[in-house]
Length: 189
Length: 311
Image 1 (cartoon, chains in turn cyan, red):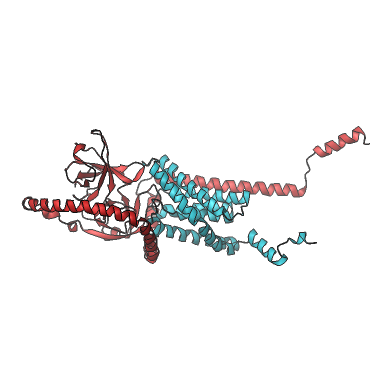
Image 2: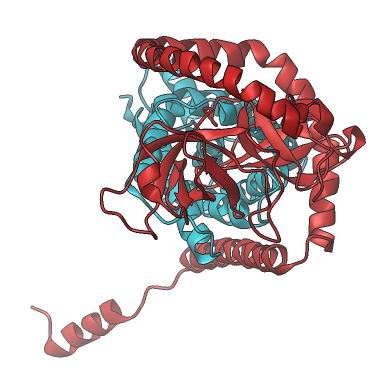
């Protein structure tokens, strides 16, 4: 229970700082017409590290904070980031990806899902801003920019969350490799 | 050699499901985990949909909007502080971006400079001719915006998504800012204040505004309604001009100074809106004229909110 509270507090701090950086710095920087969006990357990284349920809850919380901070229609970002966090968590649970490029691929996918999700929801809510080539170009630029920072963001999120996690398979494997010379005790003669 | 009866019994044993205590427990735990996971997701999705329905359909004075305004009130000092602390980071990114865009901007500005020199000489000549007439008519009362009680505010947040053209500023109702006030940035029209809290406000940019702006072609005086270009977040259109043949590419579009619709804001006259970038080749009264905003709406650091205008 104490561990869960510890993880929850770290997640809350992570979400708060990430959205604050997004609001104050990244939302004001346009690069090649697009802009970096930290929120889906942080949610996807948390989902990848913690699993589907914590990922979905964290995504919902971050989305609510984004909606409140940007004075948007409440629930739109919460719904999208909740699904992004859940999806990233399911990737971890089903595939247990170990490849170094996993955060990059997942970050790109999370950004694309968030951007397209926004487009669909805004369209359903009747906002007069249909998909155009310019908008598609901006979405592609945002996905590319987010892909570039996905691995560093995942690394930062991992460094922040891992000390609070009760069991990290990679850490366990490293420890075993250190004590047994890389071999499982079962494989020793 | 086994008897046929023995073989049948063995088959029956094999077909019987092997049920062990460990397997049952494992499946039970797995089912419980799956059910819990799905229940949490369903709960969050339903909660989001309820919030969307309540927030989208609710009035601006409803409970959710009050909560949102209260949250913004609490957050705006933090945003403002973080914005100041992170200004060096912001400047660093801007400097990197400027390096990439510098060459293109230099060439574009050189061309623009040449055109502007010609226009300046022409305008100075016309200004001398019109000065006496303007003085007689009393039109020189609007030399600057000081009569509109401008409030200078720093931008503390940018557009949240590609679909929302909105800025957050660090001046609110305590500084006299009200919903509907026009915002000016870099000497051009930027947008309208659409949400106000005590110490902060949200400005909806002109490329995302729902209400039109009454615009006028500078050289010809043709008027029309400036609206967003649906799907193109960085462009505007001028509609309902009576004679589009009088409007040419490169013309400056300025505010006309009258209210476009009942719900639109009143903007002071002669504030630059943008430059005409394309005119329909076929003469069509219903055709739209494309305008590029006079200022880069994605790179505004501070704005002036005109607080003493009738709404």
